[in-house]
Image (cartoon, rainbow, N blue to C red; front, top):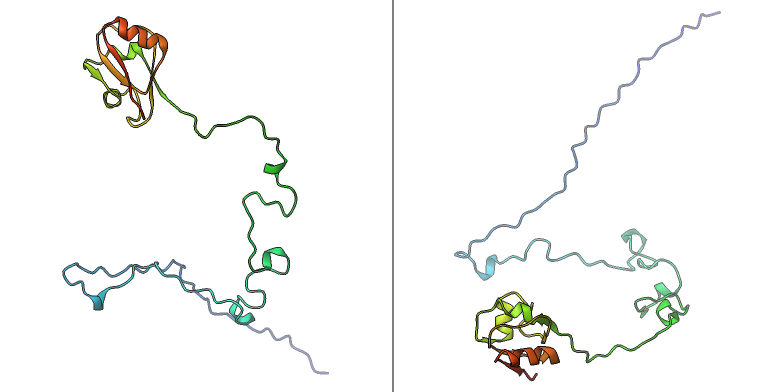
Length: 183
């Protein structure tokens, strides 16, 4: 009998594949000087136009068959529109909650200034603009109400949209005027 020699085959070395590090490709738009700007070299800004997504053009397109709408049901149909808070036909939470009270659409919100704050202003006529400049109110165009907390020392004319009873009597007793601005 023949002796079977074990044949050892050298291992096959596979070539090493070196992958280049994947970096995002960034293309910067060419800078065009205003001097050489003309109709023939105008270009749209980079990234301002995106390729259109073609739907229903076969399975190989990636957007075939169901045209990116999943399968069946309400969400796959044309003309579907759900309002905010839609719960699939169940009575929505906003309609299930009890409604109480009343909120007026015509409520007047005033910026409040006390009489003690007005003592720091040296002007003879105090208007909403003066109050805004002195930092007592945020907006000169919004409504201002003068309240009677404290007392006023100077005889000044104060123009505001509303006065409390105590504030108007304090201003008059100090020798000033309380003028109501009509809106």
